[in-house]
Image (tube, rainbow, N blue to C red; front, side, top):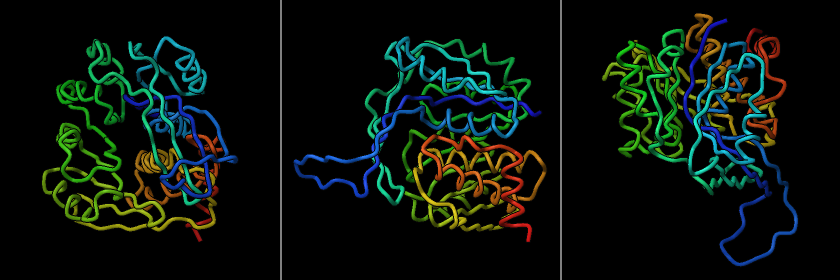
Length: 297
């Protein structure tokens, strides 16, 4: 089993699913699907990667409250070591409003502290043994980046819906060797991807929701994959993190970029069929069977 260290992003979320987003007028909505579950980008990656048999160490912030206990309970999984610091602001919470097309309005009801008091040197042991290091863009994680550099650790990061100019992301962009992001707020994503490879990044991958995904390699090669249409949308929360996990699973096997993206497409597809942040069915056996079904024909 390969070791992976992930830092940043665990919350306890309320999720409301409607056929359509409500109009911006006063109204009463009598019917919806509602559930509460763990969320956020670090938790999504950690759960998916642990199910794919990575020996996963995941750090995040939680509160000394009932929601923090619920986060801990969700992360009691094989291959997953959840370590945490207590946030004086309490456990991060989001309200996600989803529609039938998988689109989302996310409201941060209780964001985490941006600069909590943490002894970052305590992570050195886990970083040294990690085969892969994933630093999410939660603000407190940026202070680990200098330690990653000192230890010569390659950094994987996920910029999510970066718009190409928000300075909040710059520390993570500068430190990363492998960058993932969404094109939601970045129509000219190819220019950004080219720029990052010119700046020395090893790989940039951009997802497009129903439009599939695009990779640009250090060899200046463009690679495109489409979604698998037979996966039906139930809930898209966590799909990007599952794509990331599937890609990294393929990468750890030494597969070429396109095959890695195909594994990412499978794990994302399994995710959207679940109301959880990652599919409870996810595992190596399943995704290998799905790969044979959809790609090895």
